Length: 379
Ligand code: NAI
Image (cartoon, rainbow, N blue to C red):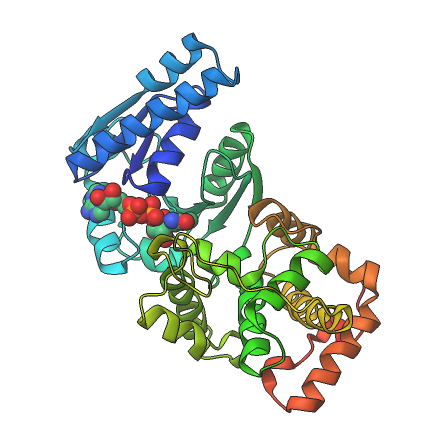
């Protein structure tokens, strides 16, 4: 099948590479000629590295590079069986592009979006034949991250879903199917990793370095929340939180934090600006954590209970199965364990107890335990 990818930025270029590596011919379209050249150059550098590491032969590398056609002409998508859109995260722009796209492709072409935060139903809303719209959400970097969330919209025909799932699986990806709800699985369930860490900081319970130390050393996460937010960028991470909060009709569980907002406003985006929660300038000394294991365990217990509560909520609200939620968090954001599995190891009664303690201490809806935990429903 000929694959079209629209947008040659971070995600589009990576998705094009994935499709080409799996034997497809790919048409990569971007309005920006320079971006196309950049994507082509980047792929060539990636291939050189892979040849050096003997992960790919010279021959295969040439085939992959030759499989991608770089173009600024949208109508070059005409013979494609699937087009994956990965342009700017703006509904008005996506609407314009999808209307245009529908005019150039065949009636049987699947139209997918890689959006992280917009609803697939809203994107498909402008299509005349909306039963072929679907979300195919890759993680950054697309060639390396195994997870892909596949999101059927209310308009999506079952056959389109099946085709998309089997195609993306054939690319060696771990596929999870989820409902068209804000943040899908990963960007919803992961919110407390950042939000509860920020809340703990704002209450003066611990500083950034101590929270990061606790979550890595005791919690077993690869990166602490503040290091990770600095890595993702506080501008990007704040925007995702704000959009999920708004999309959930201001559910207090997703409330953004002033601390992150101020960091964003100050231009303290993280690594990319040299300053975030930490200072990345040359010679800067990183703050040392307070290695208090009792405090550290309390921090981990609290953030983990909130993450598990969110995982249960995703299952409770039928966003995805328990298995899919665990796969999503381990394969999409490298959590050391699936959250549902983790809850069973710790004991769901203990998780409920932690949440009820927080709920009664704060009296805030944010800490309400999910009914599945409250009623001891075994997943
Ligand atoms: P990016 O800014 O790196 O790339 C976007 C590209 O789209 C640019 O090259 C731009 O020239 C091109 N473009 C903009 N308008 C266009 C149009 N009308 N026609 C053709 N090309 C156009 O953006 P990025 O980060 O790759 O994100 C793309 C999409 O993927 C967004 O919807 C985003 O939410 C989603 N996404 C991003 C992830 C990330 O970590 N960056 C992860 C998963 C999804």
